[in-house]
Length: 81
Image 1 (cartoon, rainbow, N blue to C red):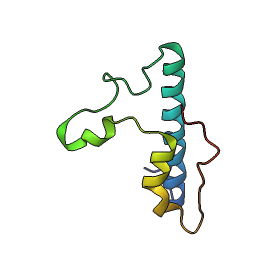
Image 2 (cartoon, rainbow, N blue to C red; image 1 turned 90 degrees about the vertical axis):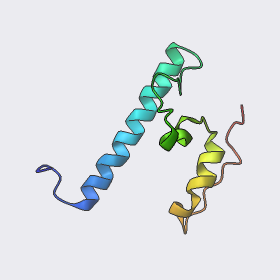
Image 3 (cartoon, rainbow, N blue to C red; image 1 turned 90 degrees about the horizontal axis):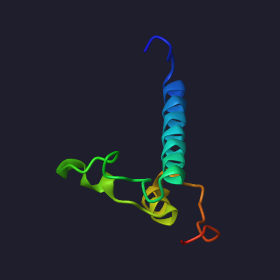
Image 4 (cartoon, rainbow, N blue to C red; image 1 turned 180 degrees about the horizontal axis):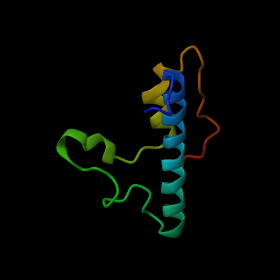
């Protein structure tokens, strides 16, 4: 990690990687509908069972809202289907 000199930079790079992974999954789903969280790309092992569950944006925000404090994130304007 000689190119990452601060914890802030590591955090920034992790955020970029997360967004890029989501973009890749979205493009995959556009090319093959229903494959966003396909069994061939999502871990389905017992210790990591929860990562194989597809969640709505509202469910994700609900689980992560403690990390956003003091900012409140509203999902009321997001589509539900």
